[in-house]
Amino acid sequence: EVQLVESGGGLVQPGGSLRLSCAASGFTFSSYEMNWVRQAPGKGLEWVSYISSSGSTIYYADSVKGRFTISRDNAKNSLYLQMNSLRAEDTAVYYCARVRGDYDILTGYYKNYFDYWGQGTLVTVSS
Amino acid sequence: DIQMTQSPSTLSASVGDRVTITCRASQSISSWLAWYQQKPGKAPKLLIYKASSLESGVPSRFSGSGSGTEFTLTISSLQPDDFATYYCQQYNSYPRWTFGQGTKVEIK
Image: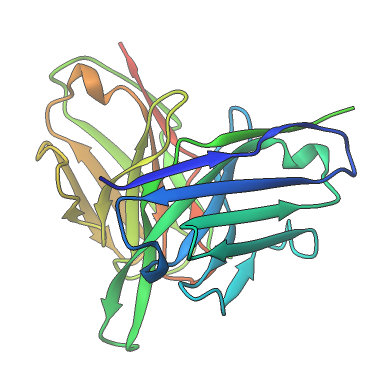
């Protein structure tokens, strides 16, 4: 059974830092691309960051670029999100999500969506 | 970024009703659309991918259709377990994934 378990959330002051972790089990973690997605209280879903299976390719949403760093340790089956210079608008539940791809015959590339999500960890940025 | 707009934002329905949720993209995304169900305090759950492909284990009362810029999620006969919020997501624009704002299905 695929399981993704986030941890590391909590209350932090504006300008502070936090490191989130996502422990994966039930699948070959090193073979899958992963993402972080967040959801502000009472709001919709916002993609935050992507990392390839090897960790060599990384993308960020503009809203977190330069402040957040995604990484992974395939030996430990773990995904991480280092969050620095936190702002009130970063307050949200953060989910890790596994990627599954559909092959696009027109472009020769895979189109990726999210097939499994963790239960989320709440980050509150407040003084 | 591609904007995704869902309608309605809230839908009141009864058990047994046929329910349809619409999702519109600001530009063509072919069939690269997924639908998720989210219950309060829980993670989103994948229901539909590639606009109309049913995820394994998802009841057949759920179906998706559409291509280009307009898509629908239909629940053929609403069940008590289906009261939740539903999100569409475009995955044509990689890695700029974007979601609709959500449609809450409430008990009438």
